[in-house]
Figure 1 (cartoon, rainbow, N blue to C red):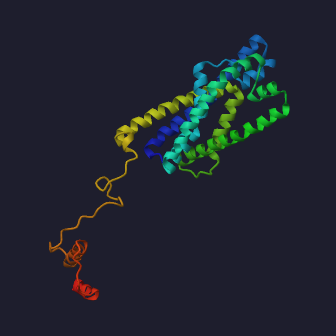
Figure 2 (tube, helix red, strand yellow):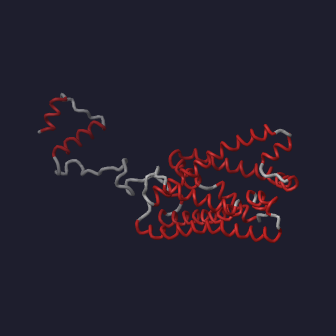
Figure 3 (tube, rainbow, N blue to C red):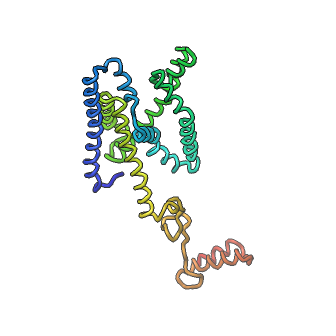
Length: 288
């Protein structure tokens, strides 16, 4: 939960950030309208301009939008929660990220050249062009749709966790925050298409990178470094530790006769000198 002293900053920064996202959509929409009025080519090229951003992204925007798309809600909320719950099993996400990066490095350059030469709009167009089958095109589309829905569900769940529970202490199933954020996302996507999405993704990527560095700095300042975060508490550092030892006065100190007899009995039993008296007699002796 967020402290009450920090909520004022959240109530200022979050609306400003939402306004910035809508402003990105308006900026791209006005820029596209100016370009269309100069060239009179908005009709045949409108689809490419909206869904592909005109195919003219630079390297920085491309890298940041891919970063924000791959490492988003499930990275900030899902993976840390799983790591805290199951431990080192969560390392599989590192291998999965490497597989994704290397597969893109192998296939993306050639697909990029082919998309420019043959005007592809999606990977499904490449499949249909290569094999000449619309059935295969729509089959690939259905297979791509399933993980997209799973990804979208993960983002909605992360949004509900952060927006509802952590920031404003609302119930997780409260749809208010999700509906507001969804309406804003749809608005700037409708206005600017993929260009506005790429701009907002770049801003989100920068915020995430700065947040990761800020988390590392806070970990070093408040916990003494990353290595001490997962260390087990000791009786000296945690009074509530289940392994904390209780130090009793030595036997014979006179503080409690009954405890002194019990301590001497336990010491003699541990050293092998077991009393030969009957158990009932020993109990009565201890009670006296």
